[in-house]
Length: 72
Image (cartoon, rainbow, N blue to C red; front, side, top):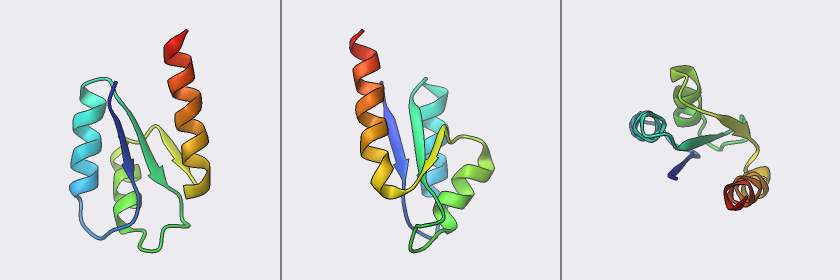
């Protein structure tokens, strides 16, 4: 299972990556408005390809929970 995480940035390459990951059944994350440069995460969210929008410090715990669920 692939995972994509869009953090901070200006361009749409994060969105393109998320679209490809979603198309193959992966999970995608975007940092919330706490991103230093929010254009890339907002662009990804607007595209509809993001599964989870979280503050940066909450992303690792969500990843751990998703990984644990795959083991069952």
